[in-house]
Image (cartoon, rainbow, N blue to C red; front, top):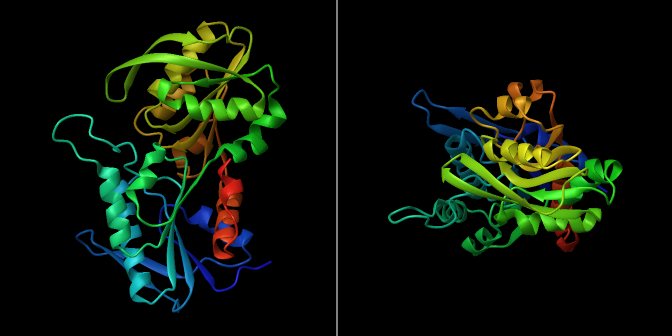
Length: 315
C-alpha cells in the first residue's frame, strides 16, 4: 500500500539508500537542490510543494561530517519555512556520537550539541540506527526511535550461514550487551576481548574471555573507524584457535588505513550496513560486503506515518 501525503528527501550522504526506501514505500524521492557558494556555504532549495506534508530527511552525518551535518540542518530549516507538517530526520549514522560525555577536563559533549542544533532547526522526530551510546536519546526532548541493525544482519547473512556452534565476540567490554543480543538470537555462545587502549585509534588486545577454539567467530561492533581494534580482535581469536572469523559492523566509517588493514587481516569477511555508503576503496576490497538497511528504515517510516507501533523493529 502506498504511503500518502509523505515526502522523502535526501542530501548528498545517502541518495541510494533514500531511493531504496522510497521505492519500498511506493513513492519517489522529492526534488531538492543542494549547492554551494564559492566560499563553501551550503544552499538548499526545495523544488516542490511540501505544505502540509509529513517529510522525512534521509541523511547520515558521515564524512565529510561537518558538511553533511550543515546540509541536514539547512534542509530542515528549508522544510520548516516551506510549511511542512512535520520533519523527521532519519539519520542512519549519527556523527559525533562518540563524543557523548566528558572524558577529560574542559572537553565538549558534542553529541548533545548536535541534538540541540537539530531541534533548533525544526526537527520533530529522530530515527537512528545503533547509536554508539543509547543514552544519546536522552539528549532530545522530541520523539526518538532507536533502531537496531541486528534483524537485518541475522536475516540476510548470519542465520543462513552459522549454527549454534558459532561464537559471537565482543571486541571490548562496552559492546557486551550488543554482542549478547546477537548470540541470544543466533543461539551461539559469547566471548569478550579484554583490551587496553594507549592512545586514540590504537588498541592492544590482552586476552579472551570465553572459548573460541575450533569455532567460527563473529565479531560484533557498532562502529569501525581505522579498524585497528577490529583487526587486533581478529588476530587474537585466530591465535586462540578459532576456525574462522568474520565481522558484523553497523557503521563502516573506514577511515585512514582501515581498508588496507582489513585486506591484510585474518578476517574472512567484513559485513557492513550501508548506513554510511561505500566508496571506491571499500567497494574494491574483496573482504568487505554491504547489507542494506533500506527495508528496515522504510518499514519504520511506514509505521511512524501510519501511527503504528515501531517497537517490534527494535529487536
